[in-house]
Image: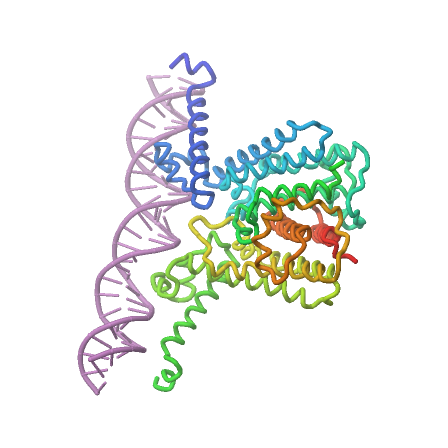
Length: 235
Length: 235
DNA sequence: CAAAAAACGAGAGCACTGCTCTTGCATATG
DNA sequence: CATATGCAAGAGCAGTGCTCTCGTTTTTTG
C-alpha cells in the first residue's frame, strides 16, 4: 500500500483506470447498439458494478456521450490526417481523394459512431465547447489541401461563379481561423465539397440511396473525381 | 344511431377519425420534442385515452413512426414539386434553385421532422416499402429538371469528367426508374447535387457549420448558384 | 330478432430506462 | 488516532414500450 501510494495516490490511479474501463465498455456498446440504445445500466452491468456507481465517474449519461463523441471525432480526424500525410504533398488531387476515402471508410467501419457524430443530435444533449476542436479536424485537413493548392499557384477553377459580398462576409468567420487567408471562391468550393462528402456518406449509410445506386464504391470514386475537378486540384 | 350506421358503419368512421386524431397529436409531439423523445404514452394522455388503447390503432410505436415518416416525406416532396411548378419551365436554373430553397425552408421550419427523415435511423426501425415512394419525390423533382435540361439540348457541362463504365453500371439502377434515360454524366452530377443539398442542409441544421459560416442564407444561395453552374443549367 | 363474434377502452403488470438518496465501508488527510 | 472524503451497493422514483385480462359495446351472423 505504501509503495503504490507514493506515486500520486493509489486511489487516483484506480479512478483513472475505472474511468477508462467504463468508457471502453461504453464504446463497445455504442458500436453494437448505437447511440440511441446506449444504456448506462447495461454498461454498468458489463463493467461489473451497479448503475449508481457509474455516476461517480460520469455525472450523467450526456457526459459519457461527450467523452465518446470526442473520442470518435479524434479517431476520424486522425484517420483523415494520416491519409493526407501518406500522399506526396504536391499530389493535391490524390490527397483530397485519400482524405475523402478515409472518412468514408471510417464511417462504413463505424456506422454507429458516425451516426453519433453526424446524425440527428440526441434530444437533450448540448455539445460542450470541448468537442469543437476535435470536430474541426476533418474540415481542417480539407482546408489545408486547399491552402496548398492556392500556394502552388492559381489554377483555373472550373466554372468560376462570382463570389458576392454577402458570401464573402458569410465566410469571414472561417477565414479568421486559418493561418493564411484563402481565396473566397476556393473557400466556398471547399465548404461545398465538405457538404458533398458528408452528404454522400450519410445518404449511403442511412440507406437513402438504396434504390438508386447499385455500386457505392464506384459511385463514390466518381463523385470524388468530380470534386477534385471542381476544386481545380487535378493538374 | 340508425342514421349514421347506414353510411358504411358508424364504428368504421369513428375508427378513422380516432386514428387521424392520434396521428395529428403524434405529429404535434414530434414537432415539439423530436423523434427520439416521442412517447406513445404521452400521446395517449394528450388524446385522452390510456396507452394500451392506442395499440388498437397502431400495433407498435414503429407503425406510428412509419405513418409520420410517410406524412413528412409527402410534405417536403409536395413543397418541392410546388416550387418547381411555380417557375417557367424553360428557366432550368431558377427551377433548380427554387426546389433547393423549398427543401431547405421546409427543413428549417420542421427540424424534427427533417431529423426523422434524414437523420440517424432509429435503432430497431426498418423502413417498410411504403416509404420509398414518398421518399423519392424530392430526388425525382431534381431528376425531372435534369431531364428537361437534356431535352432542351446539350449544354457544355462544366469540367466534364469522363464517366467510367463502373459508374455507368452503378447508376443503372436509377436509369430504369426514369421515363427516358439521362446522360450518365448529367445523372451523376444530379445525384451529386442531391448529396450536396442534403449535406448542406444537414450540416446547417445539426449545427456543424456553427463556427464556420456566419450567414447561412447567403452561403446557401452561393452553393445553389454553384450547383446550377456545375449542372449546366445556367444558359 | 336473438345469439355469437368481433372491436374496444381501461387497468394491472412486466421488464426496462436515467437518475437520486441513503447506508455502510475503505481510504486519505489533519 | 480521529476526522473527513471517496466510493460501491441498494432501494426507490418517475417514466418508457408493450402484453394480457376483463367487462362493455358494437357488429355480424344464424
